[in-house]
Image (tube, rainbow, N blue to C red):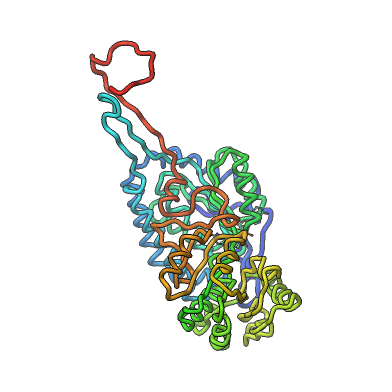
Length: 497
Ligand code: NAD
C-alpha cells in the first residue's frame, strides 16, 4: 500500500516512517493509503531545511519571486482536475465542489502574484530639515501552517503563497486525514522553479504540531481548525514567542426576515447547509426564522432535501458526498440522536440513507430539525455535518441578540428585501464575515478571511492585506545624508525645524 511521505528540501522523503496513519476513501470506507507521521526529528529536519533556504530566499528579488508564483499559478490551473480528484478521493466532496475549492485557492495565488505592490513600504520626505523617514516590509523567516481536513488544498493556499511571496520559507502540516494534495502542490511549486527548502510539508499529528510550536527557528504560525485546538495553538505558540493567527470553529446563523424571498432563502439554506456535507467552517447550521418565516420555509426546505442526490463524489450525479471518517460520521449521527432526545422536531432524517454499492461508505443523508432551542446541544455545538436546524423568534431584535450571544462569530447571513434592515444588521452584528442575501460570505482573495470571538485567536485575518501584514514585519528608517550645516551637538529632542 502506498505511503504518503514528507516533502523536505525539494523532494519526497525516503526515510522509513516510525509511525503511520490510515487514509480512507470515505465513499467506500476502505483504507487507500498510509501517511507518515513526523517525529520531532523529522520536523527539525524540515525546519532546518526551511531555515537554510530562508537565508537566500529573503534576498531574492521581487521579480524572481513573482515569476515563480506566476509559473505555479499556471501549473495549479493546468492540474486543477487532478488536485480535485485527490480531494474527492480522500475528503469525499463531490467533483464540482472540489474544483471550486481549487479555484478559490488559485485566487489567493493570483493575489500573491501582486506582491510587488502589496509589500510596498512608505516614504516621507523632509520629516525634519533634509531628514527622510521610510518603512520597509521584511519577511519573518520560517513560518509554519497547520491546516484542517475540510479544505486540504485551499486552506494551505490561504497561507503559503503569500508567506513565500513575502520572502519567507514555509513548513506545512496538513490534516492527516487527506494529506495528498499538499504533496502534489509541493511538487508543482518545485516544478515552477521554487528553490529547495522554501516550501516543505511534514505530515502527522499532535507530535509534529507540538514540535513546530516550540521550535526556536519557527517565527510564526498560521492555524485553521477547531476552536479548542486553535486556542491551544495560540496560547502555546505565543508562549514560545511566535506570532500566531489561529482560526477556529463556527456556528453560522442565517436570519430570514418575513419579507424575504422564501424560494431564494430556501435554495440558499440547502446549498449552504448541505454543500460539502456541511463540512465547511462557513456552512449555515442555524436558520433563524423571524415571525412567519419558518412556517413558510419548512415545506420549501423539505421539497429540496427530498431531491438531493447523495453518493460517491466521483459520480457526476452526486450533489453531496460522504463525511470524512467513520469517527466523524458517528459523531454527527450522535447529534441527530441527541436532537431527537432533547425534544427538537426531526423534519428530515438522514440516518436511514442507503447508497447503492457504497454500504461501507461514511454517508449520512441531509437532516433537518425544527423548533430547536438555544439550550440544546444541536444549537450549542458545531456539528460539522449535514444537519440544519431551525429556531423561531418573534422579532429581528431577538434574532440579532441570539447571534451576538453566540460564542462563535465566523459567518452570518440575513435574508430580506428590506435594505434598511440589512444595513442595520451589517452595522450591529458582532461577526467577522456577513452576508446579505448571500449565505456563505467568504471574502475574495483581496479582502481577508476571519471571524471574531471564539472563531479567531490573534489579531490578523488570513490572506488579503492582513496576510501580507502577518507574514512581514515593518522597519522604519530615518536618514540624513551628511551636510556641513548639520554639524554641532544637540542634546535636546528634535524640535520643528
Ligand atoms: P482539528 O482542529 O481537529 O485539526 C486541525 C489541525 O490541527 C490538523 O492539522 C490536526 O492534525 C491538528 N491537531 C488536531 N488535534 C491536535 C492537538 N490536540 N494538538 C495539536 N494539533 C492538533 O480540525 P479538523 O477536524 O481538521 O477541521 C474541522 C474544524 O476546522 C472545524 O471546527 C471547522 O470549523 C474548522 N475550520 C475553520 C476554518 C476557519 O477559517 N475558521 C476553516 C476551515 C475549518
